[in-house]
Image 1 (cartoon, rainbow, N blue to C red):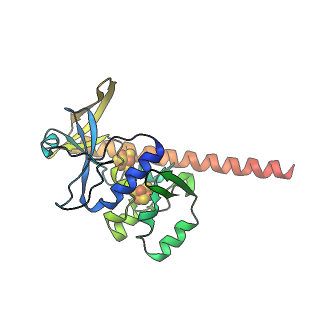
Image 2 (cartoon, helix red, strand yellow; image 1 turned 90 degrees about the horizontal axis):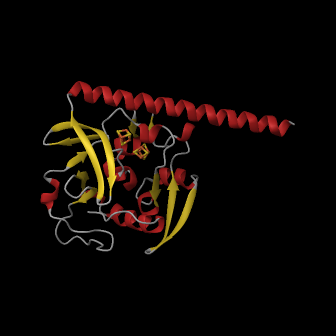
Length: 230
Ligand code: SF4
Ligand code: SF4
């Protein structure tokens, strides 16, 4: 499991280490027993694992855990105000034309305990939409065209925690409570219809946020140009 996040430079370092193990990523789980989210990987024996950022937990902790789900058709994290980013090690694996496109994106060089890491920001489309989001099909183009391993590690491990499954059943989060010993997430088992209705709600929220952001940017642009004319 990836250890819990700390400060920014450490988190970027941990994410870069996790990006190297992407193909062994098995999911994000909420463990009511440990009261925390678990970002789980299952590397084959002999794989080098950086013990500074990963900890070993017995697989049995996942037995009563909820597995986080990001159902198709929501897209809220990609459609507007996306804070998604890619790390240099991930960009270097993309086809040359995409690498070139990313060079034009806003970048930040972060000094981490493992050296300097370049972070490429993706949310520069209309309303802060991710440049890899396919609006018409409501899906990630990187995943659809190249496969899950090409998605940024942050997108693989980030979940809103609203949707989850356990023992083949669907669950929706009904609330949370922060305690001294960790976070309590509360889930309710739901029918397929309730699940679909929740996706529709989330997706329409994404559309509303995207519209609002586009309007805001247009207003800022117009106000700016009027200001220049004065
Ligand atoms: S809000 Fe949740 S379900 Fe929607 S895209 Fe983000 S993680 Fe997925
Ligand atoms: S890279 Fe893909 S999953 Fe990540 S924000 Fe962009 S469209 Fe969404």
